[in-house]
Amino acid sequence: MSDNLEENNVNVEETPEITHEELSALLKIRREKLDQLRAAGKDPFTEVKYPVDAHSQDITEAFEKYEGKEVHIAGRLMTRRIMGKASFCDITDRPGKIQAYVKRDEIGEEDYAEFKHYDIGDILGIRGEVFRTQKGEISVKAHEVKLLTKSLQILPEKWHGLRDQEIRYRQRYIDLIVNPDVRETFVKRAKTIKSIREFMDNRDYTEVETPVLQQIPNGAAARPFNTHHNALDLDMHLRISLELPLKRLIVGGLERVYEIGRVFRNEGMSVKHNPEFTMIESYEAYADYEDMMNLTEEMIKKAAFDVNGCSNVTYFDNDIDFAKPFERITMVDAVKKYAGVDFDAITDLEQARKIAKEHHVEFEQRHGKGDILSLFFEQYAEKELIQPTFVIDHPIEISPLAKKKPGNPDYVERFELFIVGREFANAYSELNDPIDQRARFMYQEELRLAGDDEANMIDEDFITALEYGMPPTGGLGVGIDRLVMLLTGAYSIRDVLFFPTMKPL
Image (cartoon, rainbow, N blue to C red; front, side):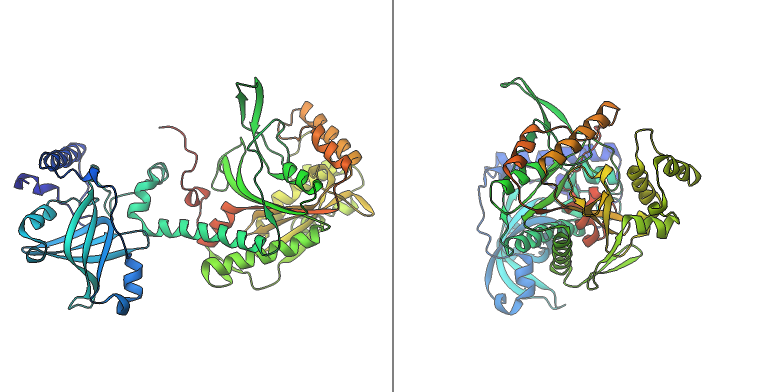
C-alpha cells in the first residue's frame, strides 16, 4: 500500500468535524484502498467465516482461564495507536471491547504494514495470546491479523458524531456501532421479553400466533392501517389488537393462551406512541380481572428484577419501588381525589356536561356520562399516578368487550395499570354473553356512523364463537415497548425500537 493513503488512518476519539469536501476525499481513499487490496488478490469481501472462539467479555471476566492461551477474536476496529514497530488497537464485538497488541516482529513486516493502513470501522479477525500489559490492561497479543470486511464509510467520532437524534433513529446501525449504551438498551429489551415469556410458560400458558392481516380490526379503540389482498380482491387491515383471535382459542378449549406480537395503529406519533408496537396479550379461562391484576403485578416485578437485578427503577426524577404492593383505586375515586368531582353524585348526562364545562374538560356531542368520566380521569388523574397503580372499574361506554360489574351495570370489571403517569396494561373480566356483545357492537357501530373512526366494528364470527360458549375469562394486554422504556430509563419510545417509524427525508 502506498504511503499517500496514510491520511485516512483517523482515530475515532481524535477526529475533528470535517467538511463535506474532506469527507468525500476520505471516502475516495477508502475505495482506493479496496481497489489495491483486490489488485493484490486480497479482497476482504471473499472471506466467508472466521473461527471466533472467544469474546471480549469472556476474556475480561475470566482472565485467569484465558491467560497465556491462544484465542481467535473478531470485531470492529475502533481506535488505534501506532508506535513505530508496535501498535495498540481497540476491537469491539457484541458484548464489549478489548485491546489488541500488534507487533511487527510478531505478525511479520508485510502484514504489519497492511495493518497500519487499515481504517477505523474495518472488521478484523485476530489470532493471539491473552496477556496483561505492564499497565495492567487485559489484552490480546496478536500472532495474526486478518481483514475480514473493509469499511467504506467514515464512522462518526465520539464527540462530534451522532448529535442528531433523527440520524440516530434512521441509521440505527451506526448508533449501535458508536454508542455501547444503545446496545445495552436493546439487550435489556430482549431480557424483558425473555422474562415475560418464561413467566407465562411457567404458568402453563400456551404461546400462539394469530393473523396480522384481518378483515375486521377489533379489540381496541384505534384507527387501522388498510390494505388490499389482490388474489382475493379483498380489503384487509393490519391488526390493532390481538384480542378477538385469542378469545376464539379460549372458546376452542385452550384455556390459557398468550401472544407476543406487533400491532399497528394509524394514529399520532409522540414519545409514547409509534404506529407499530409490541404487546403481550393473554387470556385465562375461569379467571377474572382480579386474577389478571395479580398476574400483571407478578409479571412486571419479575421483569424488573430480571433486567436490572433489583426491585427499584429510577425513571428521570421518579423512584419506582416494585417491591411494594401495587395500589388500587377506582376511576371514580381517582377523579374524586384529583379533580374534586364525584361522578357517583352525577345523575344524568346534562349534569356531567355542565360540570365538564366548568372544569374545562372538552367533550363531543356523542360522549355519554361514562366518556366524560374518562376524559376527567385523563386530564386530572392520569399524570398523578407515579407509583404502580391499578385503576379499576371503568365506565361501560369505553369498554365494549368487558363484563359488567354485578349490581352496577354502568361500569365494567376492567383495570388499567399506570406508572409514572403512563398506561402500561389494560385488562378485563371478558364479556362472554353473545347477546350483550352484539348490543355493545351495535352501539359501537352507531358511534362509527357518528364519526368515531376508532369505534369497534361488528364481528359476526366472533359473536358466533361466543354463542358456542366461552367460559368466564380474564384477559390482559401489556405494552412491551413502554415497559422497556421504564426499565431502561428511555425518554422516547423510539429509543427502544430498533427501527422506529420515520418521515422520509
